[in-house]
Image (cartoon, rainbow, N blue to C red; front, side, top):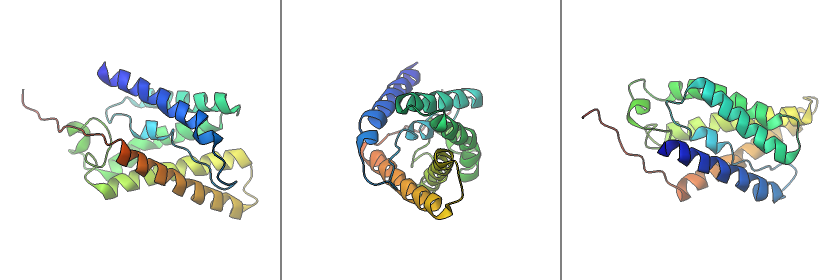
Length: 177
C-alpha cells in the first residue's frame, strides 16, 4: 500500500512539473525537456507487464490531455513501458536486483554505468518516437536526428540531476525471516 501511495504522489508531481514548469520553458526549437518519463523508469521491478503498459498509457494520455495532442506522448510512453523489462533483463543479472531491490536505481542496477545505459536507451526511444510522431515525416532527417539527440541529452541531464537531488536510498532485502 505504501508503494502505491508513493507512486501516485510521484505521478502527480511529475505530471504537474512537466505541464506547469517544463512545458512553459522555451529553450529552443530543438530542445524539449521531458522529465515525466522518469516516472516509468522508477516503477518497481516486479510490476506486472499489463499494469506497466496501462500506467505508461495513462501517463502519456495525461500529458497529451494537457498539451492537446492526439496521443503522441501516450504512444511514446507505451513504447518505453513495453521495452523497459527487456532493457532491464539485458543490463542486470537474473539473480540480481529485481529480487533484492524494489525499483531501478544506481545501487540496484549494479553501478552507475548500467543505470546510465538503462536511462539512455529508454530516453532515446521515447524522444525519437515522439519527435517522429510530432513531425509526421522523415524527409528532413537532419532535423529529426538533431532534435532527437539534443532533446535526449537535455532529458538525460534533467534525469541525472533529479537522481542527484532526490536520491532514493533503497534497502537491500534479505531472505531471512
